[in-house]
Amino acid sequence: MLKVIKTIFFTLLFIVGITFAMNNSEGIVLKYYFGLQTPEVPIFLLVLFSVLFGVLLAGAGYIFDQWSLKRALREREREIVSLQKELKAHRDRATENKE
Image (cartoon, rainbow, N blue to C red; front, side):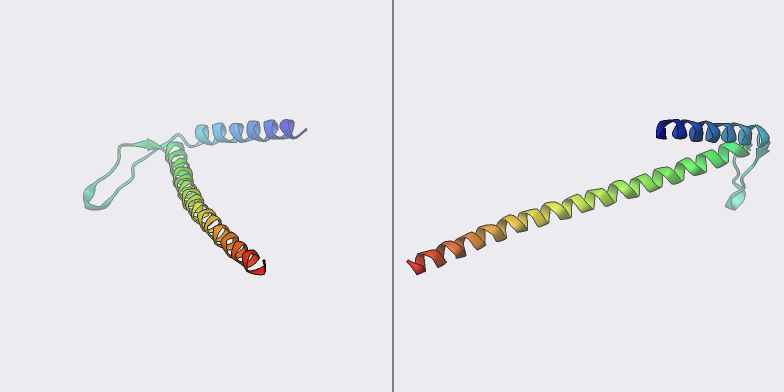
C-alpha cells in the first residue's frame, strides 16, 4: 500500500514539475554588480538549479555532521575502554586486599 502511495505522489510531483516548466519557459537575465549579467535562462531552470543547489548544501551539512558525530563516538568508545580497564585494575586490587 505504501509503495502505491509513493508512486502516486512522485507521479503527481513529476506532472506538476513538467507543467511548471512548460508554463515558465520565458527567458530571464540575472544582473549582478559591475554590469555583469547572465545569458538568458528559462525561469524553470533557475528554480530547478536553485533547489538542487540547496539540496547539495544541505547534504554537505548532513555529511559533515555525521562525520563529526562518528568521530565523537569513537573518542567516547576509547574513553569507555580506558575507564573499564582502570575499573578492572581497581577491582582486582580490591579482591587481592580482601584475601
